[in-house]
Image (tube, rainbow, N blue to C red; front, side, top):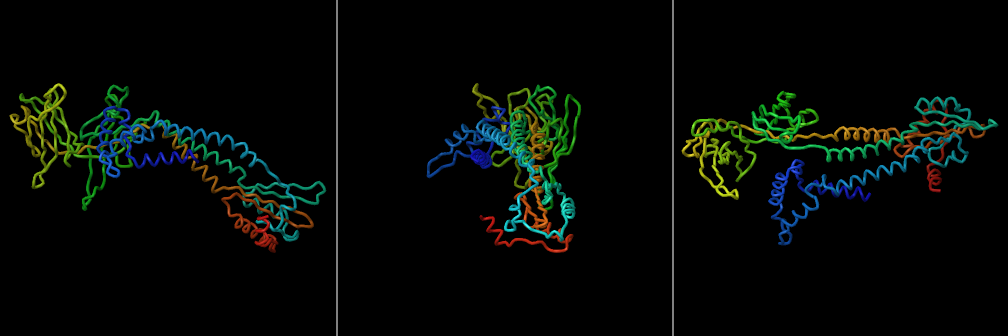
Length: 464
């Protein structure tokens, strides 16, 4: 219970505190950028006038609170829980097996005392042992019988779902496999986020990875309803390997594309600007979309370094007073060895317009059209088959345990006592109702109602 409590607390921390994307844990630059955002998010936090934000962020980073589910201490807690469940299962299994295997057909007369719950007695003439056995078999009981050596007493025993208690082993197996699958995913899984403009391609894994996949955003659509809300988000996505297309699909939210163990999930989108850049001789330096995935002063922002030059274009998507879209451009160039930049021009373009090279550092920049980029979460989860196996084992184990609990019925047959009945059931069964239904069916066969103890007597006997 202590281990589970600690894991619950850790899970709450991982839920309430913003977690770093898995992709940033493998990329130092991305990690630094994410931590800068964490400081921006929490640094202003104060407690009783004391500014605690910066120290809290540093402490949380050291404790791993921004990456709880990949932190070594969390993995250690999970490993300890797996070991505990495994040892507990090993300890319980022999006792559990002996409990389901042990069958006692013969019971003493005191076992059938009418003051005990779920007890009854038929007179010998009202019900025959053969009728009782037939009814029990009709209710899917496995029937066994025994008799005293002198033939004065005989017993009939019915057992239903005898081995279903062993289903708890499936439940334990499911828990272990869930944790094992998570460990495999954490150790060997791959996750990244890819932003791709319309018509662009991007590698899934780092450049140079053998057999690397390339994704191409053929087109993106985000149609709106009449009330202005988005109706859908869909990307016509193609995947290439070694220069040939290996898959293509229009992906939507919750309808991903799966290729060679990689799953491409539609995750986000935003605006882009298709621009063309030509140098002073009219030669093409760049053509294609620039992703405006950043934000400055509430405006979508992107950056492009003009190939073959030291000039960078900082692009902002604006609109004039009439709502006409405008693309604002700020030209930057490096002025110091430390990497400081200075502004060399500012310009704005309408859709289809081209800048005067004299105003934009000798380059003619054309805003061909506004576009959109799509953002995808790409995962390769080798632990997924283990997780699905765990899910199946857990559900099957729970269903067998809850819906097929064990029931046992004993009958003692003697000339003096008639047929005495007793029933024991697992805790998930309404034993009183089930015993009453059995008696109703036996009464229909025998013709008269059995003798039963009073509820007061049964309660007193149980208390004793």
